[in-house]
Image (cartoon, rainbow, N blue to C red):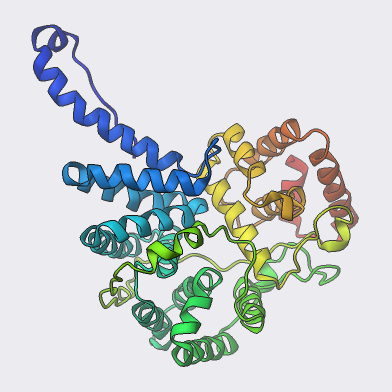
Length: 417
């Protein structure tokens, strides 16, 4: 989203009026980008107050800067997934004030989703699907049209002569959105959602899992089973459904604006057909969910959610998103991890250490270079010298005790740390 601006010193002296006229719109655009990107960060005002104020600013600038605002909002939906609900709330407030803008945003998001899928940018596409689903909670998108999109996603599992990883991704895109929107969809379309989950269950039962032993960090199933990612997420969603879709960890700022948002007109998603499979498509590889801690390892303070609790998935997913967004700047990344919303309700240091080692040990290769994880752990210990080194020492001792069942490639990576 950043823009490189070029200046010409000679122009500054010879054409002051022209210079001022051309630079002013750029300054306003930069201000809008900064305001949107920074909303949700630490502030003396409440998040709700900041969102309401920002919505007012953007509404006033829509006549002259609508295309720029659309581009920025579509970009943050894709590259700042850890602030998902902050931005869906902002879009909801704008839609309540300007219905046409809400419709244009939904159309722009669908175009962007199609482009990311065609470009094999599946991580970004996943964030866009999740963003669209959360817009149902903000009364921007009608629930039936979201269910229809999910049905089209799951229909991919019926295609012939396609790699399993293609079906896996579309099923994962649906399941991983349900912690955010499952409750709303079930209230509106329970029969259709039951049918959808039954189709997913049938697919999960027949899919091959010969890859699992090759991707497990440990060969032993005790003390923590190393589950295949779709199996684990399915168990978490099933428990969430059993708990009547009650989830207690996702930040949901739109609840504070319910009286405003519920009056807004909603948009239907246009019919969405997943792009056909092509030989040059590169789908995400399956993986195994790394587990190193449970509630017994953090006896003091908040209790760690169980492995099949959807809160565990949400926390880990958000921490992965933070690392993905900020991994190039270790200090910023460490600070963002330790500023995680709701950190007082969970044993955050244990979650952070587990997620970092989970990425480092991911097979066949980690998402980022090995040394990044070492640098990040050092930075975290600097910021939390009174607590994080102890958790890291506890984790290291546990791993050395289990070296005899550890994958040799992971042992090599552990030695680097």
